Image (cartoon, rainbow, N blue to C red):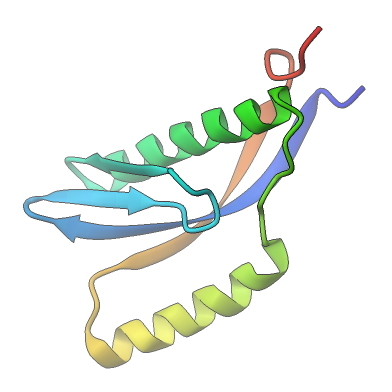
Length: 104
């Protein structure tokens, strides 16, 4: 039985009216905020972990597009530098413990 799962997830973080907004384009519904970019990223990581654990618990497929992340991230940075966007895109590795995610 698999007890730990490592996945790479892309997060976008951008300023939002004095706070910071973070979301995961590959996981529909993962949208959070924070007072700092680091807090917004941590909140997004926590939300993504809960989201993925829920998918596993309910035996739903994981909608992750790992192969496309590096290409998307590269072009996102290129376009951002051209248009002056303040959005940052990061790929984070999540280590999920599946002890609570897998139904008994």
